[in-house]
View (cartoon, rainbow, N blue to C red):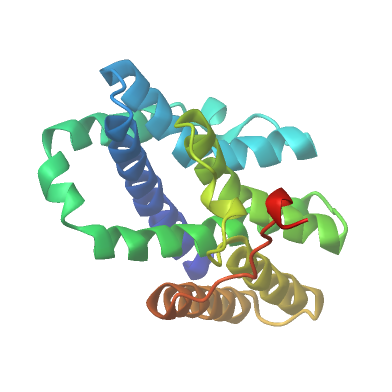
Length: 210
């Protein structure tokens, strides 16, 4: 396994734990029971990769092949119940972990689609699905408007990260440098968007105005 793959795998595990824990906080705001907390944690953390694999016909699913991922994500969510007060105060840390998870999951999704010889647009979409859909599922199950569909730059970061990674791979550049470059640009883009509140233009329609 190349060094960058090892790093990506380690970051992915950290991001899965973070996604499970933030999902637990969302479940707590909706007063879900403990089973709901564990389920929401696993769905949020693993939902993007599962959706990608189903759409691409990539089997077995990651968590089916590695069932310990269910225990990892669901367990992280349940652990959050005991330390919710502490976790709630670590908002900035979780924003950073979420940003890392977004770019890492995007690259993993692109890598899998490339290995299946998918076309470049599909590879980029596969990366975006991997990085973003878990959060969409969490918000839908919590009866919230998904973050992806609001004004905050999120999917845009995933698309840029995927495009950089795919372009570098298509040019046969060194894989390690392409991976590190895509992570650096995507992470910087996401953190700057959070810091300066960069947003996509909003569409507002009020029938009373017409």
